[in-house]
Length: 458
View (tube, rainbow, N blue to C red):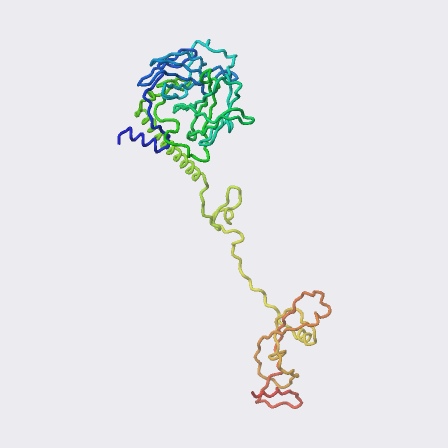
């Protein structure tokens, strides 16, 4: 793809408005704009005279207290060159619009040019502020809304003839504002309604004039804001244009830096291509630097974080404050005091219940001392009849087995016990021998014995 077509496609892709018409002539400044000095411009191409250049102050005044000494003025000429005095102070800015007989702004509009310093300051009085011949206002106030009705009005008593208004787009397509349906509105005055078909974000200077000349009504600076619709826009809608602005190369800053074009009619494709490529490369480099900075910050943050360490609850040493990280005391392999092994000691055996204690138990008193003892087999078991004491000759030693005696205290604890919460004791007594039989030994006379009840047949 040729370089010119590629540039055009790139401009279209980023959404810059473009014009379908190309001016038949161009113009440029032939010297640097300086305070109170003459400035010259030259035309090239096939324009239709007579020509005119309209110069409009741009931005605030550089003088103390923002004193405005700059006037809007227009210069008429018929040839291809002209020169006029620039009665503006240094460091101020202005915009120039060149027109021919075919229409306003047909030669193009410059971007804001900066006035350079000089030794001559006789062209203005810094103590005398200038003002327009009449004033105009717009509704809604202080704003131009895309494709929304805007009313421009003024005081008829201060106007000579019928005012005219122009829209100046620095570095773009300037235009005359159509006027129709004049009317008077209460608290607004006399005027008309205009629907601006200008794209959002465009910088527009509204300039008013009457029969006394262009700019006698002053100017206002606005940036087009978004409206409810864009149905009024088309390919011929005025806007900022790509490429080099009109006026050629001239300073646009106080340090003398200027534009790099050769005129509004030339494409200057190499200059724009370099600027676009430089902007893209700068954006990519800036993105990579930002990404590297974020990565560096994350790396430093991760490095400064304390590393996690495994804590051995038995072997960890004490930290710097003297409080052990684990449970180890004093470091090394020594176990803490709570983890030192202790021998398990069996309790001492308790003494058996004595005969006196057993007799006391039989008499309804609790045995004191140990609860360990033995009872006779079958004694105290439910379903076993009580036995009488049995006398006789020596017999074989009976087998003993431990049993538990549980004394129920349904009526409360025995008298003399103050502790109501004391739990009953379990007492083991030696076994009784009253229920033992020996079928092979004859019964002794005089001995009493209660026979066990016969078994119940099932």
